[in-house]
Image (tube, rainbow, N blue to C red; front, side):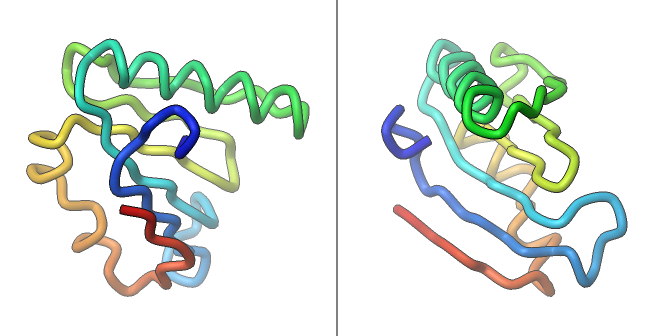
Length: 101
């Protein structure tokens, strides 16, 4: 995601507080086109390296895309939608494993 210019990347370990996944990756993109590119890139890379097919929800036009890989859920937001949903605050009991700004 960093190679594709995602901004403010956070890896959050929530396995002790959520039963549906182990980790969230949360990042921002600056345009609809960038959100789409980030989602495509993460799906392609995970499929190549781990042979796992993700399930995509949301749309770049709506300002958010989620790619669910089971144990890891990737949230890609526009800055406005990220501010609105505030996932880092909502899941603040989780452990931040990585934060790249």
